[in-house]
Image (cartoon, rainbow, N blue to C red; front, side):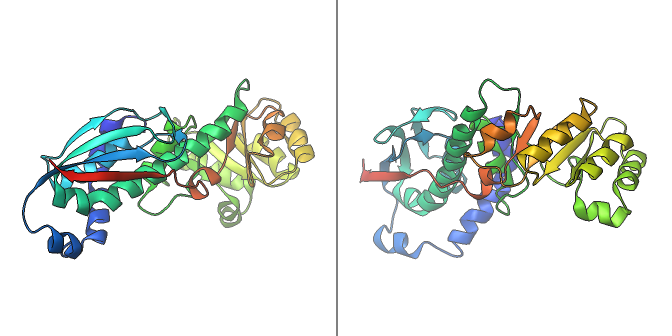
Length: 284
């Protein structure tokens, strides 16, 4: 997930769909004011402090429209950026720069916003062994980009999708008839190399999950006192993850209990964008 080249190779179909969403037949405004080719350049400017993520995706949007667009980039993904920084210069057909601008910025702003927020939360876990995880609570067709941005910000990726790992949640437990039954079915079905994670909402469910041999037990929406009891029950026989309403305000208390992982949907569903813009477009 943290290799920009791999991300680009997997991203092209999504980027083309985004461009098609914005340009169903033509960019009528650009075609009205710019009727023929003219070489131009524009500056990518940072307007807010944060962590950069998605600069290669920003560039790729333009090269999908015209492979001759050129870039000078002055920062890389993961770099701290500050308001006023010149992030990159883009040079190419002015019509392409105008038509690709909004789609390219949408990706860069969204990804950098997630990386920035993730970084601020991850800093709160420094000094502990607890890893910060994302979830599947992502924007449709944006998961590749959003989970990549979490990695850039210092977080870790939970399973990418439903094919990527076993996580038995409350409705799975209900369908299977109970915690023990669900874990037994998963063990029978899955390859032995797969870890089995199960969600537990009560201490009784925690006990059942341990007895059934779950590899990871998610302590879901438990208060601090209940989580402390749950961790004592587990006693190292399974890895622990806490989830549910995890915020920057309460994460320190939770991780002080010694959980292995803390997962937060807010990393992807509630991060504000980072303000960047394409300015100073001119013919050269």
